[in-house]
Length: 84
Image (cartoon, rainbow, N blue to C red; front, side, top):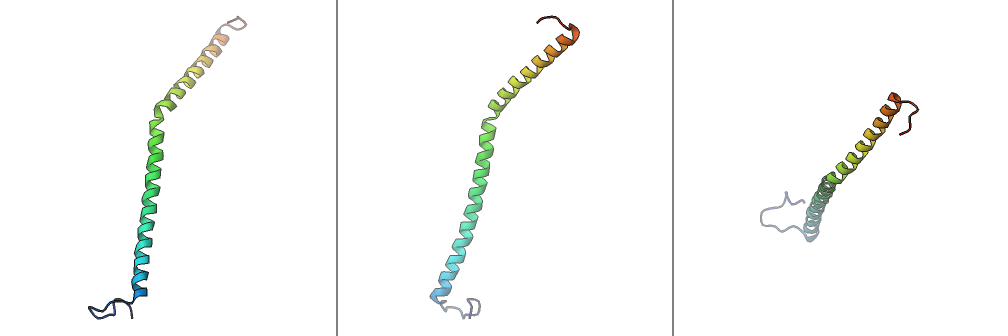
């Protein structure tokens, strides 16, 4: 006899009550784990956004170095053999 077959007002056996409590608890734990994973993902994304200025600063330095390299190449192509 399941909880659905029972007459109104009849209390289910303790084991059935405990099984139902466990099912509800496991479902809640699964939901909490999903929320925790979502929170961790969002926290990691926020950390990356917070570091965006640092990334851009490094990228600017690197682009400056690339431009310096090309300036040297152009100078060498225009004036071969001249000391810098």
